[in-house]
Image 1 (cartoon, helix red, strand yellow):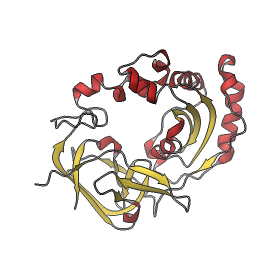
Image 2: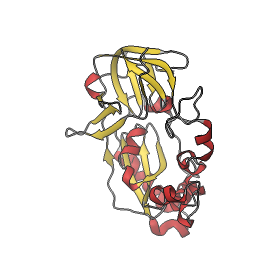
Image 3: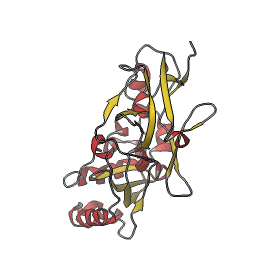
Length: 265
């Protein structure tokens, strides 16, 4: 059997018409947006490889890491999901050189609308990719800071009044861009943020709208994985966030299947 190619998160960019275009990072790169409205099937070949070191393994952890990389690689460190714990600005971390290049650099704190308004953190260089990955239909930058840990402190303080998680089921419903909700949340932030962090706030940024290649929103969605269903196929009706969405309501979180080798069938 063909070993296939390892999945990793879909590449994305906003096209000339304002709609997100997606691609699978295969060789050659596969333009997924062109498949919306067409039959698309992916089959797992049974091969797994670590997204970090490339080693073939029997089991993957946390979006595609082998166990050694899970415990040692900077890409899998705790500050990825808890930025307030980052120590890059102190010259520390699992790999100080990687931390300096990726985390001791400009970050933004943002509000995004994915079904509700949430607060989040990302590198400035990851705008708007991070918002697209979350399936946000709108986003608003509320702060810029020189390093990750400081962005994390702002996020933690704002968790008192705002969500910081994306509800994937709500996100996969039709959500309309609501710039007013983002502006209202910013006004709430201005009144609530800790005084010691307030100097980093931005009050004149404008909300950004994001559109996705969606033909229809299935009334009910069911998440599938290659571990339980080796082949997923049918008419692709849309792509949103990191989800492929089929006509029958099955959805596949591509990023969560990172390291799984697949082939187009």
